Length: 112
Image (tube, rainbow, N blue to C red; front, side, top):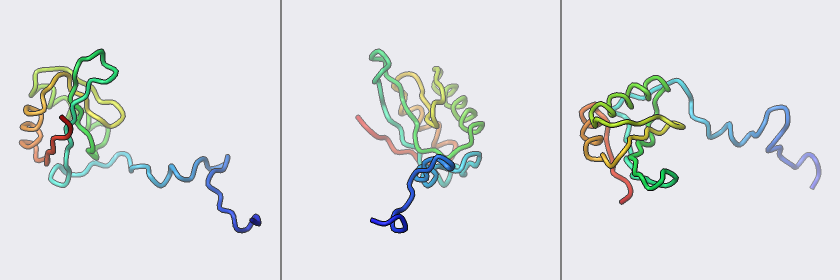
């Protein structure tokens, strides 16, 4: 293969070009009516304690924190935001689903 036929995937000047294609635009939030929140139950890496994860929301960091606070108050429990996923302590998928529906989100329950 000659040098002209090869395609550069990685370069030290601009980094990994493949990652730039999959990055989400940060700082912009979609309205709740256009989003579907997926509720997962998980306990891996938490000493057997279960948490409810809210995934696939396109929200700015500030909006994500505001939504997490509203959901924590609706459930009366703690939680956090990590890597664009809201984690709520305990098995509260029904309460979280009700709170999200009231805010205008579509909700899908995923996992057991």
